[in-house]
Amino acid sequence: MSLEWLAWGKGLATSAGLIMAIGAQNAFVLTQSLRRQFHWPIALLCIFFDALLITAGVAGLGVLISQSDLLSELARWGGALFLLWFGFGAAQRVFRDEVMETGGREISSLKGALLMTAAVTLLNPHAWIDTVVLIGSIGGQYDANLKLWFGVGAVCFSAIWFTGICAGARWMAPLFRKPLAWKVLDGAIWAMTWGIAAALLLGS
Image (tube, rainbow, N blue to C red):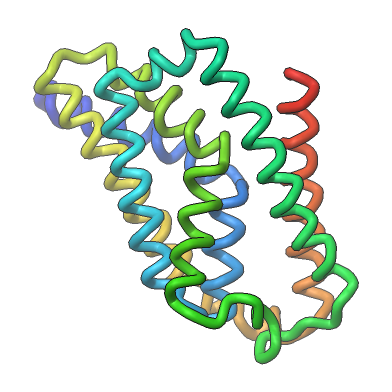
């Protein structure tokens, strides 16, 4: 196997290990996919943002952020505030009896869905840490040609992941016709986002 394909595979595997973790972005895509609300445009925008951030990271932006105390602090506090707000929305939904047909009325337009997608990606510190800092720092170790292959591999997994969520969510749709399933999902999102926010604020 050539060095190019090895770099591609490394990028694919690195992206898989980071992007598959439950986070605000994945939770939003999954929720909208279950509701069948603008899920394909949302997934495509997530892939676009991942490609943009991964490219920036591999090009050297990740090193710049990690070495700047100011940028690191802005990312930490801004990200924590966003996650608290996002988790608060999930906490409110825990105490409602939502089902598939009535859930998610908050997003009523494609523009609103895309703006929310941009928020859960660009205001989410873990999206930056995973794509720009971690993937970027690993890909940055390669020479110029292999960087490209590594980055393409990382973006390929992002495309596979988000399209897979959209395509696979319909198989889980019958389960989410019950209010309890939505409560469990939103409760998990609430706990996850506030837990990450607390870790950021405590500096851990």
